[in-house]
Image (cartoon, rainbow, N blue to C red; front, side, top):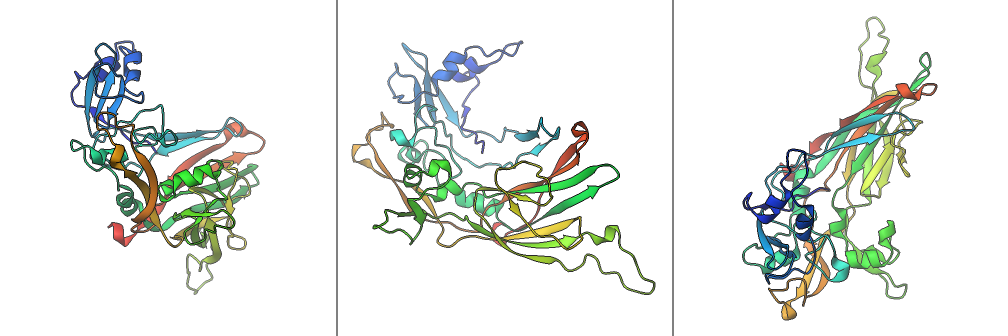
Length: 379
C-alpha cells in the first residue's frame, strides 16, 4: 500500500522550499529534505529528524522546523506489469481510498519496532498512524482505521470472466489469472511474535491461531487474521457464444453453474489460474475446475473468513515517557483484543492474455477489475 504521510502547512515550510524543483526538474536541496526523515529527533533546535507525526527538523545550528497537516487526496497511483519473456504489458489504476487518515503521520525511515521505535518506518499502516499520536494532544489518536477500511472494501461476491481457450488456426491461446487480495492482514497478527518466529519468510511455526497455542511445543496464540479465507466458486460456461437452437425449443443461458469444492485462499495475495498457461507466472496459484468442454465463461467467488478475528495493536507502559524524546522511554507490547468488524476486505482483478507460441512479440493482454457485491455492513 501507499499512504500519504502529511503535507507541509505552507509552501514556505523548510521541507517544501528544499523539495521545490527548478525548471530542469532538480530539487533545490535533496540533502535537507532527507534530514526530515531521520530517527531520534527531539525538540531541541540542533536536532534533525522526525520530532513527532506533525513536526520534523532539517539542517543544524539551528535546525529548521516544518509542521504538517493531514494530506489531501492528492496521490494518483497505478501499476504496470511487463514480461520481457512473453512480451505482455498491461496495467490499471490502483484502488484509491479517500480521506483515509485525518491526521499527519510523519515517521522516520531509519528505524522501526525492532528498535523499539514507534515513530519509525512501520507506520503509517492500514490501521493508521503512529501509536504515539495518542500521547500528543496536538495530534490525537490516529489508530483504529482498519475497521473503517474493512467496511469500505468488504464484498460478499467477486465476479469476472475466465478463459482457457485455444485458437488453433492462429496458434494462439487465451488464458486468464485472477488476483484476489485481502489487504492489511498483518494488522491482525502479533507481529513481534510472528516475525521473530520466522514469519518474515511467509510462515511462522511459533505463531498459531487463537486457542491453538501450546506451551509444551512452544507455540503461541498470535494469529487473528481472516486468512485462510474459504472461497466458494460458481463457474459458468458462456454458452451463448455458440449455442445451437433447436426449432421450437427454449434457450436457457447460461447453463447451471459448476459448483467447485471450496478452496482455501491462504495468502494476503492469491492467484487463481484458469488457463493451461499462466499469465502472471506466480510462484504459487490455485486451479479451479470448469464445465466439461467449456473454453471460456464467467465465475463468481464468495468468501468466508476464519474464526476468532481481532486487530492487534500497541499497548505501552508510559511510566518512562518523555514528550520531548518520543522515541525513548516506552515499553511496548502488542495486544490482540480489538474486535475486527465486518467482512474480509477484498480487491483484485483478472489478468487476460492472448499468447502466440510462435511469435511472442505479438502477445497482448489486459486487466479487468472484478465486479463485486458490496457487503451490507459497508453500504
